[in-house]
Length: 329
Length: 291
Image (tube, rainbow over all chains, first blue to last red; front, side, top):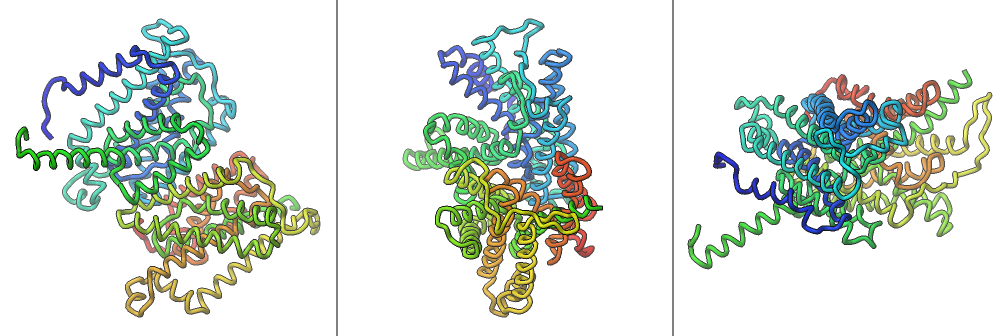
C-alpha cells in the first residue's frame, strides 16, 4: 500500500463530518442512537483486529468494555477523578487483562480459545456482581457525572449529548487510525500471516507470539476506552450490560460488517444500531434475526457487508471499464 | 456427615445431567472435531419442547422422552448438515462462528415461540423427598440418575455390540480407513450429531424440574457440559461421565461449604486450570493433540 505523508483528505473529511454532524439538526434520540453506535463501533474495530486480522476468537469482549466502564465510573463517582484520567485508566486496566488473555491465547487456538474467552467473560460477570464494594454489585453504579472539559463541568442536556457524541465518534476515528496504521505496517501483515498460516509465519521469523498478545492487548484497550465513554453516556453501569449477550452482539457486528475490515466494523455497528429502530414492532425477533444473519453470512458471504460492497464496487468498476474502454483508469 | 452425604447426592444428580451434555460434546468432537457452542441452547430447547408436549398435548411422560429425543436429534442433524458442515469447509473460525450463531438462534427461538420467563416443569413422579438415613433425596434425583445410567448403558451397548455403533466409531477415529471398507463417513458423522443433540434434549427434560425450563439457562448448561468433558478428557469415551459427575460434586460441595455465588467461578477457573496444566483431561493419555 502506498503511504503518503501529511494529512490525507479522508481524515480531514471524517473529522469535520464527526464535528459538524450533531449541529445538523438531528433529533436528540437519533443522536443518542448514533452515540451508542459509535461506542459499539470502537469496540468492534478492536475486536476485528483479533478476529478478522489475527484469526483468533474472543467471545468475551464485553468484559473489557465492562472493565473500562466500571473503572471510569468508580474513579469518577468515588474519588471524583476527572473523566480524562479515569477513561485512560480504564483502557489501561483492560489492556493489562487483555494481554494476560493474549498469553493464554498462545497456548490455545480455535474452539478451546473460544471457550476460554467465553469463560473469561462469565468470570468477569460474576466479579461485577459479587464485589459490591468495587462495582456496586447487582445495582451497579449510578449517577456517573458528565465528562467535563478542562475542569469545566458540562451542564445537562443537549450540550452534553453533543460532547458524548463527539467523544464516541472521535474515539472511533482514533481507534480506526491506530489500527489502520498497525495493519498497514509490519505488524498487520504479520497478523494476517498468523491467521493464514501460523507455522509458515513462524518459520520466516515472524514473532507470532508477540503479535498475538499485541492484538489482544490493543483490542482490549479499545474496548476499555469505549467502556469509559459508555459510562458517561448512560451515567449508569450494571452487570447485566456487560454479559455474554453483549459479547455475542459485538461478534455479530464484526461478522455482519465484514471480517478483517475496520470499515466493515463501523458499518456493522451502524446497522445493528439503526435496524432495530426501523423494525421496532418486531423487537422480539431482533436477536433471532441477527442470529440467522450471522449463520447465513458465515456460509454464504464470509466477506460480510463490507466484503459484499467492495466486491460489488470492484465488479461495477471493471464492468464500466470494459464498457467504456480504459479511460480514466 | 449427613450434610456431606446430602451435598454428594445433589452433586451426583446434577453431575449426571452434566455428563449427558458432556457426552454430546464428546460424540460431536470425535466425529467432526467441532465444539458445538449451540449445545446448551439445544438442552433448553429440549426441555421447553417437552414441557409443551406434556402440558399442551397431554402426552404421557414416556412418549415425551422419545419425541423430544427425536425432535432435538432431527434439529441437530439438520443444523449440522445444512450449516455447520458447509461452514467448516472454510475453516475453524467459520465453524465456531456458525455454532455460536446457532446458539443465538436456538436460544431466541425459545424466547420468541415460548417465553422469556423460566417455567415450572413437573417432575416425573412426586415431589415428597425420600428420607434415607437423614439424607433427603428428591424422587426426580433418583429418576435422573437411573435414566442417566440407563442411557449410558444403552450407548455402551450401541457402540460395542451393534454394527452401526462400530461404524460410527470407526468413521470418527479413522475416517480414511472407514471409507476404504465402505462406511459412509458423512452419514456416520451426522449420526453422531443426531445422537449427541438427542441426548442434549433428554438432558433438558431431566434437569428442567430441578432448575426451570426456558432459554435463560442455555449458556450455563452449555458451559457446564463443556467443562465436564474437558475435565474428564474430550478424547476418552469415559471422560464425559467422570468429568460430569466430578464437576457436579465439586459444584455442590462449593455451594454447600462456601457460597453458591462462587460455584460458577470455581468451575470456570477449573476449566482454565485443566486446560493449562493437563489439556488431555484426567482420563486422557499423554497424547497431545493440536487443537
